Length: 229
Image (cartoon, rainbow, N blue to C red; front, side):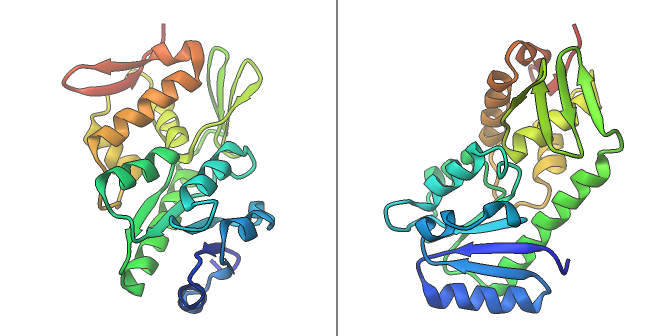
């Protein structure tokens, strides 16, 4: 854990310092930025987790997260939103962008630390699950070590959740996973995740993998599976 680096981005300087102090006490290396603009000037590839406020200046936390996920060098890095915006639509927006968790203000520091640890555990578990370095089906290949998906040699940009869903399905071709199964294996200990969030991720994943999207089959009343032609 000693080399696990976290970037906290929030326009409340006092809150940044409080989070930095408490997370460093847990053994993490923590940097802070008081705006998305400031954060985007930093080398974001150095970090293993981003804690982002939503309501910030001209570039919001949502916009910054979208930029992170569109960059293939940072798309795999998990994001936790920390924000006063706590409506269902805001939460769905955050998860659709690819967030790994969503914490509403006011919050307890124990809650933040617990959620950070949960995200780290999930990341570690995914790495451990990748017994095979590369999974493939015809022209579709998934590199477990590098967290890369390619179609006919061309890299496809997936969010962390999309990657984990595809990994789960490819590792278990032909097996049907219910929404509850996918929640338990991909979202794990997250408190607030809607079935609709899973459907949105599946829909996006199908589009991104092109002709192989038809292999991600819906079994009505049961769930999803990867079916070889």
